[in-house]
Length: 297
Image 1 (cartoon, rainbow, N blue to C red):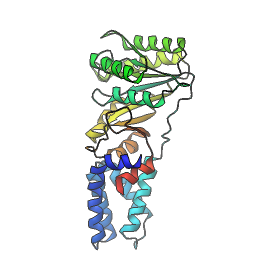
Image 2 (tube, one colour; image 1 turned 135 degrees about the vertical axis):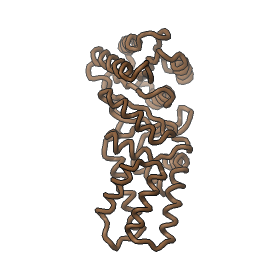
Image 3 (cartoon, rainbow, N blue to C red; image 1 turned 180 degrees about the horizontal axis):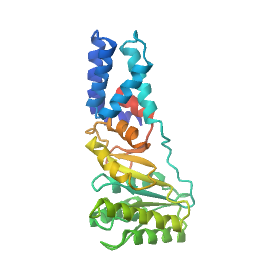
Image 4 (cartoon, helix red, strand yellow; image 1 turned 120 degrees about the vertical axis):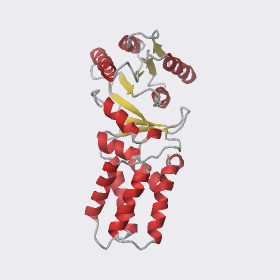
């Protein structure tokens, strides 16, 4: 995982290390060093608010005599602590278990769901997928193609059909065929945000009625390549109750990974998975320590 992350976070690391090298060569005061570290975080796409919070914590822990090497190590500790403050464990503890994937269109939601299906599908844990984004024909076709490739059945409905009815049919099929996991792809845009959130709540109610205790996970899919704009998207989806974590997609080398810090800090949600490419293999379970190591070292 670390090697892959180092490659994918190359742009982030380059922006930060350039600042670090300047600090190593210079003879700056501690206040100047902390100011430069804050600038390095902002260049890596960490928000102003989160960068300020990190530097304030660093300042409170530091003695006046601490130089750059000490501050660098403490910065790593602060970042790991921030990213690890919420439990990133992915839970499939129901019988059966149901996972909802939510997020705007274009964020990589359907591909993220397929990657997750590939990761957890096993002879003793059979997976089914539901194409509940009935307002976008391409989403249903894309998930159907993934299903054929992965050998995972897909339940779908007619274009424009009620998404909740597709989910209801999928849950009935899940129970009838004694599958262990259902992954549900949902719509990312339905006329207005209010209608979208109402539709998602309706789907969640149906799932909870048919399988008590489900869904076990509701993952918000965010595109890391759009940086701070991902936070704007995410805040809209926080109107939908029960989101348990973030699936951060498109961490492919073009993104500045610092947005991950702002997402966790400002949304109070753990990152659970990283999408690092286009194939079903390009999925990493999130590790705060390894992410920070790949970002800084």
